[in-house]
Amino acid sequence: MEFWGYVRENGKVGARNYVAVIPTVVCAAEAAQSICNSVSGCISFLHHQGCCQLPPDLERVTDTLIALGSSPNVGAVLLVSLGCEGTDVDRLMSTLAATGKPIDMVRIQEDGGISASIALGISKAKRLAALISTQRRQPVDISNVVMSIKCGGSDATSGMASNCVIGYVADKIVDAGGTVIFGETTEFIGAEHILARRAVNKQVGDRIFEIVNNMEARAKSLGCDMRKGQPTPGNIAGGLTTIEEKSLGAIMKSGSRPIQGVMEYTDMVTDHKGLWIKDTPGREPEILTGMACTGAQVMCFSTGRGAPQGFPSMPVLKICGNVNTYQKMEQDMDINAGVIITGESSIEQVGEYTFERLLSTLSGEMTKSEAIKYFNFIDIYTMGPVI
Image (cartoon, rainbow, N blue to C red; front, side, top):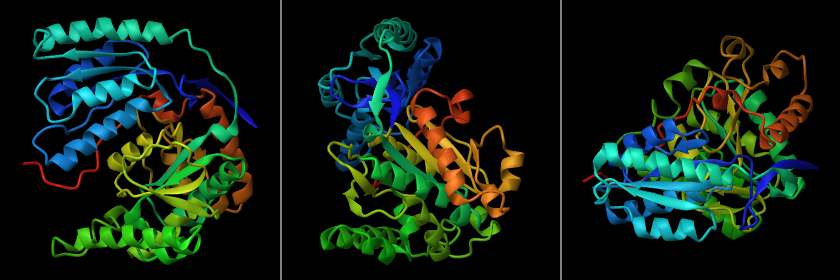
């Protein structure tokens, strides 16, 4: 099995070929967006971080931006720096340059302020876009796929239909020699023992328990339980009454294959193969950022109530488990898995259709969120306060 992708200098394979315009701090976000809006083929990672944070979080922001710029879906990078941020701009620049991608930078405080920097950035982005425009897709084996998975806006149909479809696709990717990453540690709670039984060894199983315990401790540290935050009001209205109930449905999207290990939030896929966990929260902006950090070329996203958002560099294929939601939000949902609930199709049938759509997406077909450019203002999952 093959798809058509962009083979990068480091051997990674991309499903898209973007110029990433990356602000190194929130203060440069508007300038980066203005540059991005003016040049075809550009995307931007607009975030809130990069200043007045504790050192471990500033390091995490730097690592995240490096991982996003290293994505195989990114062909070139333009950094937009204010000049006095807390992120390590020199490390960001040198590490991304080492990937072999064309890279350039605008420095707002040195380049004449916002207006002059936007004009300079547009000129530099145009050059980068022209430089990578001659790159062409070529057939590559499906073992090069890195697929991330997520569920959001869940209801009672998610665990019975759309999550099951994603689990079916995840097993196919793993069996073909590819890589699948899943997360949402909050939504393992109450089902972590089931995941631990699938670990390849005791060390991995213990690590699964550890990240769940750490997430529970973080929630308890504020002196309250996580109800209303998890399950969300929307989850409860959709028929999910407890975090354990939600977790049992959520882990269905991981399929049935052995779990090879646990990745940290900013970790990138290097020689990883098979099924992996990434330690993340459940909220979309943070987890989508963390999953894009892996180098995933694509995400399969399950929803019941209707979560429409995508991500700038990583196509997000929406699989909807609720037929009523699909009918109301057909312009946002890519695949109707609700036909499993109505008995019109089986998990296997919708799974095979989703797998074919996945290959088409990897080969260049736009998802619905891509077509309308509906992307979040991304967030980076940090551990400490802004000070």
